Length: 472
Image (cartoon, rainbow, N blue to C red; front, side):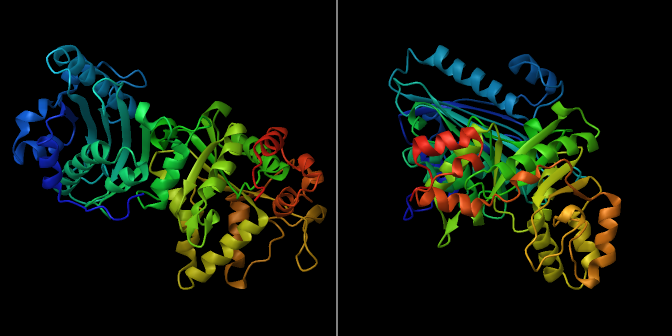
């Protein structure tokens, strides 16, 4: 990453692009006006760069140009709409202008945005994308992102979209060879005004880039506190696949994933599916890897991250990379996408830590603090553990949610959460795997011992052996 780059003013960036005689393209914007194109028109020399600028603002006009969305009529601020816009506008550039401009690098910029409304019922978010060439003779690349707008004013949100669009064009044409710098440049002049919670890099000039690593960079560099990628390693956004579904999240270090974690996931998923009043295909499962669990001397170990997430992807899991400081923040993020229910699968000791931290951080308002975590549609599924000599065992000799000792100040509140079903002990677990501890498994791998293979899923054991994960 280029840590010494000069951060230019937005107008300087736009002018520099306009003055580059090799760059030529089109702008298509829906929703918040033509804020990006306006920057390029206002700074001058636009005739050398802009082939076309348009806004299909009317919904019927938009459908006539780009088609009706298959996932639901009336959706305009969505990923598929953005790709339809990029496909259409870039194809027009090639079909109409390639013959007379054979040496120019074409681009198509598109955005579809819903800015905050007068009643403040819409918070403001959008999709932006750039399809662009770095060489006139090569296929184009795509950089696609989702942005959450944080300003509490419609005009300021429109301004932020304009700045972000200019940043996107400038970063793609100037920093494509350094993807992490490209990501950081998206936030120029926008800190605390936007969150970019999905970025995807695709195309011939990004063939060497692992989009799982792009997700880590986005969280590490403060674009957002969360990024998500699919089992195929493709960056995805919660709003596109979780709307009105239920989501189950399992927290862990996954270094490596063990049979204990797989048993927790299996049991919690079965129980949550019954509790969520949704068909099983409407319950989406994700594994969360926290940034502070990846950090060494304050910086995440990228290879360690890739090793862990490759194992999770091999198990067919969608992965969350997060930097949320509190559990309530993760819950609030997913609540914004109208999920039906949220389930969180935890080991009993992580629940113990959650309760302790909540009490310590909010001594004067425990009722509100616990209320922010244990919302009506949120349920915690707690996996048991074998107790140490100093820990209290519950029924069956296991340490579980029902037997957890809590501070006297929250004893009745905690009991209410148990009675109300916000906290539930996992049922049907396999007691034979409870003696497996991931730190011991990791130590066995690192020291070359045998026997660890029986403590992890077969797919995990195969990959660790073949690729030498966790050896150093």
